[in-house]
Length: 115
Image 1 (cartoon, rainbow, N blue to C red):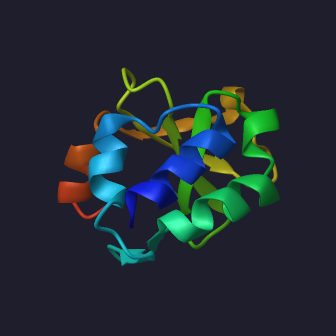
Image 2: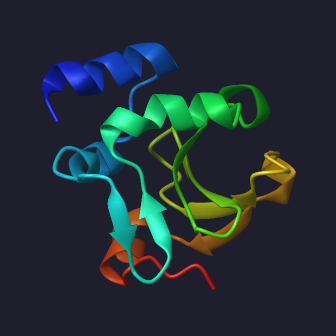
Image 3: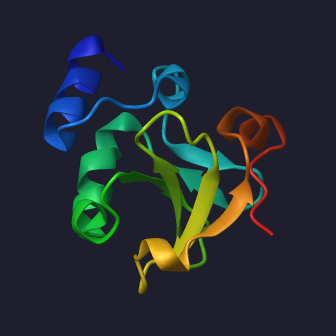
């Protein structure tokens, strides 16, 4: 990932990526983590968030991946809330979020459990 790539995504979002996520994504190539979680690469973030209407349905959040079973992996953009959430692609509403981890870095270290 180049600085230009991350800058382009942040301009499109109209918001800075949370520092804890930016540290991860700068070295990440899209792929599976654990048994079923697909974490998107920087090149896919815009397309996936547009496809799922994340900005309209879940303002203040970013779809960063999916569980290979119909649920999106979500992070808050505010940088304060470091939790990881799941939400069904058919119900992209904040009220339907399920918290799967309190901290993004700890979730990564545990190999991204979703159950």
